[in-house]
Length: 448
Image (cartoon, rainbow, N blue to C red; front, top):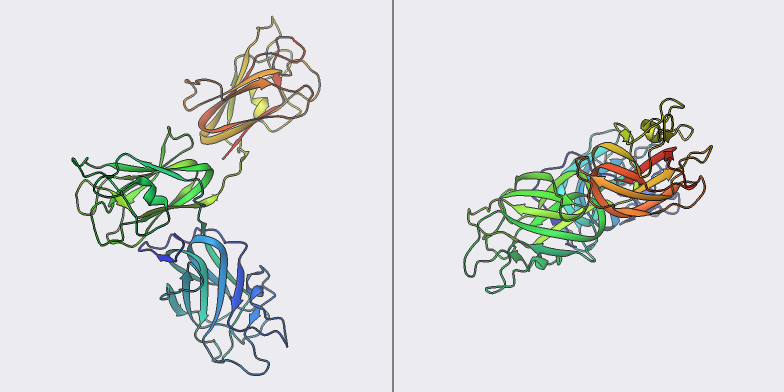
C-alpha cells in the first residue's frame, strides 16, 4: 500500500518508535536574517529552529512543514517542540496534521486542534495511518502573528517491510469464479483480492493466509484491508495473527475482532522475529464461511542477531569436575572468561562425546552460537562439535550445525538457519589435543 491509508483503529498508545532519516520542506523559511531552514526542525537539535520568512514581508497563516519519512510507515503520533530560545514568534497554536502516500494527495486532516501555550513538548496522537509523508499545518500562532516555527517536529511509527520476495499461500482460494489467489493479498493493489473458494462448495471458517518473507524480520504490526469493491463476502471479523521462523512452529501474537466496514485495520503486537506470518480468519462479518482480503501489510524493523541476555539461564552438562577445580557447567554462561566448565577427571575420565545444555528461560529465536575456549591451558578445548536446539529440553532432533573448530583460544562462531528454541546444546565430539576432556570459558547463543 503506497497511498496514505487511514484506518478505523484506535491509537496504539504511543508505543511506536521515533522515525529517523526524515527530511523536511516548508512553504516558507527565513534564510536572510537567520538560518530558519525546514531541515532544522528534523535535525535532532532543540537549539535550532525552522522559522517562516520575515525579511521582506510576512506571509499570512496558514503555514506548513512537510516531513518525508523515506518510505511508507504505519504512523500514529507526531510531536511538536516549540522554539526553546525564549522567543515566542511562530509558536504554533492552531494545527492540523495530514498524511500522504505520495506527497501530492493529502486528503482531510487526520488530526486537528489547538496546542497548549508554552514551550513544552506537544504530542498529537491519532489512529494509525499508512503514509510516507506527514504534514504539520499551522493555522494560528500563540501570539497571533503570521509566523510559524518549530525546534523539532517528530513522527513516530513503524516502517513497512519491503514486499520484494514475499510469497503468499492460503488454505483455500477461488480460481474458477474469479481470480481470488492468495498472492492478490500482497500485491499492493486495493482492487485485487484473495477470496476463499466457493465454486463447488464452501469450506467453513477458520481460513488462513500465510505470508513468507525472504529473510527474518522483527514484525510488530499487521494491516488488513478488506475488499474495496463494495462486496462483503469474506470480510474478516474474528482474527488471529501468528508468527513463525520455520513455517512449522507457530506462536500466536494477537487475537481479536476487527471493526465492521471497509477501512484498513491495524493489529499491533510485541515485536516478534519471524520469516512467516499467518492471518487466520475465525469468523466473517456477515457470518458466512468465506474469508477475503484486498491487502495485508506487515510492518517492523530488520532483524539483527545479537547475544541473547543471560538473565534466567541455567546450564547443565553430562560431566563436570567439582573436586580438582570448580568446573561447573554454570561457569560457561556466567559472562566471566576466567571461569570454565570442565568435564570430570577426578576418579576417571568419561569418553567423548560430552555435552553442555543451556536452558534460555524463554522461547527465543536462535541463529548463532559463540564458543570461547579456556584462556589458560588446553585440556578440553573442543575440536569436533555439534549444535542442537530444543523447545522442551527432551526432543533435540538433528543437529542444526556441526563441524570442527579452528585451533587456538579465540572465540569460535557457529551460524545456522534461525530456529525457535528454549534450549541449546553444544556437543563436543573431539578435543584439540585428542584427549577425552571438554571445556569452555563461555558459550553464548545469539538471536532475537
